[in-house]
Amino acid sequence: MKRLLSGIQPSGELHVGNYLGAIRNWVALQDEYEALYCVVDLHAMTVKYDPAAMSDRTHDMAATLLACGIDPEKSTLFVQSHLTEHSELAWILNCVTPMGELYRMTQFKDKSARNQQNINVGLFTYPVLQAADILLYQAAAVPVGEDQVQHVELTREIARKFNGRFGKVFTEPKALLTKTGRIRGLDGQAKMSKSLNNQIPLLADEEAIAKLLRPAFTDPARLRRTDPGNPEVCNIFPLHHGFSPDADVKRVDEECRKAEIGCVECKRLLGRNISDSLAPVRERYESMGRDHVRDVLSQGAERARKIASATIEKVREKAGLLGRKGAK
Ligand code: TRP
Ligand code: SF4
Image (cartoon, rainbow, N blue to C red; front, top):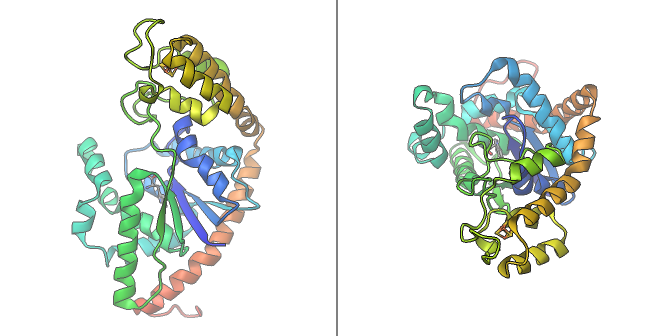
């Protein structure tokens, strides 16, 4: 099986957009690839954060991924900072990465525009740490959304630069673009995100989901119940696609256009379908023991370390660093 790696920041609760756009896909990919999934806490340090909350967030993200169906029998789930190899390789890769490339990164431009008071060097070299995450494991495939394709392309270039200068160590990875596309938030404006407050939390119960859906933006042409709508422009419809049975999707698609179903009922149907689909995730999350999560993460780190340390040894040798006494 080919190897695959992806990462997610421990940035608080997941929402249904993350689930449809990424996590559901990660769960499916475990059967086709040797998958490694990494909670990237070091990346989360590049913006201002509460140190008292970080460890719980990291733990919670791991618990949520397990609840979603990441299976430790099939995949390796681990925390980035548990392996010093990530930071070590990031440093070495920093030394073959042109600054000009990093200045071009869209995410850096966006984030530094939004955090004018905290444009730290970590934010700048964020993509190099991401390249280290990927290259350490010689991953062939990296499932990501559209916004991360640029970082995977850069990773390929960094791999080529290192290989060209020091001799071949790294495999060039390919981005596996998630097909779902971006899920818009309930405001119908931007991508669903926690910071924009336009999200449905993944672990919300039926009542909470209904309450969030009620004021949500729909097709603006439907001012009255009798106005026909167009599901293609409505940001509620993709959620039906993600969570509703085919029969409901078809019904909404047809009846919306003929003004036979109202938005109120359409949303009620959606709320129930989201809640039903995610009920098993909520249940698994509620019954997940802390010790179990810690065990999974420590086994994950151990498995990951076998691969990572072999790569690092090769890198050190090719780069000409003096071998540590006692190291092979
Ligand atoms: N930068 C990615 C994001 O914001 C997270 C990430 C870190 C990642 N390391 C990775 C994704 C390695 C894929 C592979 O979503
Ligand atoms: Fe959107 Fe549903 Fe209303 Fe149609 S009926 S506009 S799909 S919410």
